[in-house]
Length: 197
Image (cartoon, rainbow, N blue to C red; front, side, top):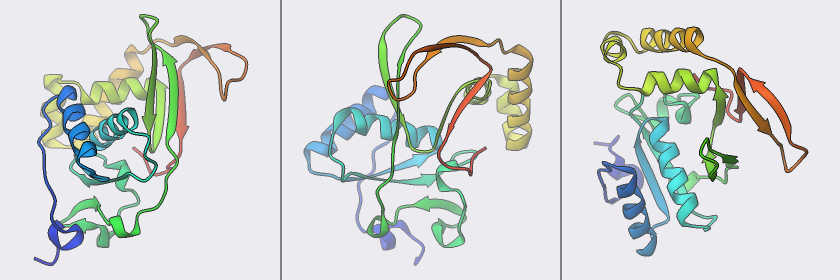
């Protein structure tokens, strides 16, 4: 029909990604074949996984990321617009009208002392918000059951579990290569998009 992805972007190839190693393999193969447009079908975590894979494999500033929102909050698609949906599912696949976007880069040292880099398009956090998100995305049986009843109830339950079990994180932070300072972090958010859950 008129609302099909084919009518919006033309012919495309799909790959079901079952592991982090597989996304690296598939994106690497697509880049070698000259692909420069990618669509993540999933939630915000899937968009983030695709972004991080692309940023690690390519320095081409003209690669374009789109998404089909199959997640619980779909912050990448907010604010939701009726014209940017297919059968009620939010989509950002209008590559003709794509625009450049700043990417947040976070360099950090993990608990084992390894230096790492992560990227994100919307927002980033460490502390209780990140803990709540990790709990929500975990495979805890009671959360899976709540998600079947109501996503909002499951989010609230994950947030409450985080509030009652969280302990501040001791960390050293620098911004833009400034002086390192020690903090005990309850929550630190980097917010680029005000529309988030």
